Length: 137
Image (cartoon, rainbow, N blue to C red; front, side, top):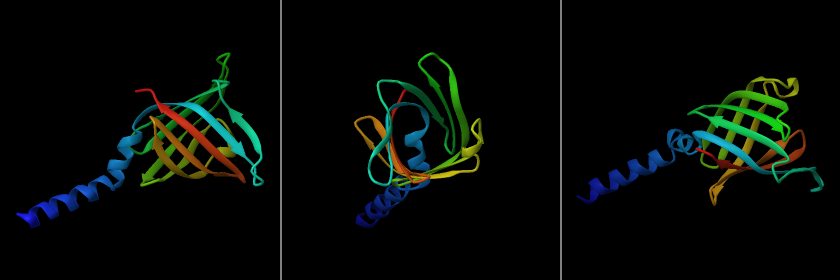
């Protein structure tokens, strides 16, 4: 009986830390709550707060799509691609975009889930990105 419980527990742990279980956390629609961008000296070079810029990201089990627009409703950028989530490592690769400089890029983020937010941090061209996303469905 103890051996059966041990195997059941191990199987559950393996599933919990598998890519399929992790990806399920992200499936759905997310809206950007807050973002801050810092240079290599730690100086803030950009910040998004108070819905000054609006962004929505929709994720399936392994694909994402995002669109960003300003308060007037003017479209600014969109993109799509694939992603993986393994533990606290979130990686996305852009395979379609309205902004040429993003095409083919892979972003490697460290992510956490806290107080209903998906928070990820990583580097893009020497800039530290920290984004806070709230699930909307």
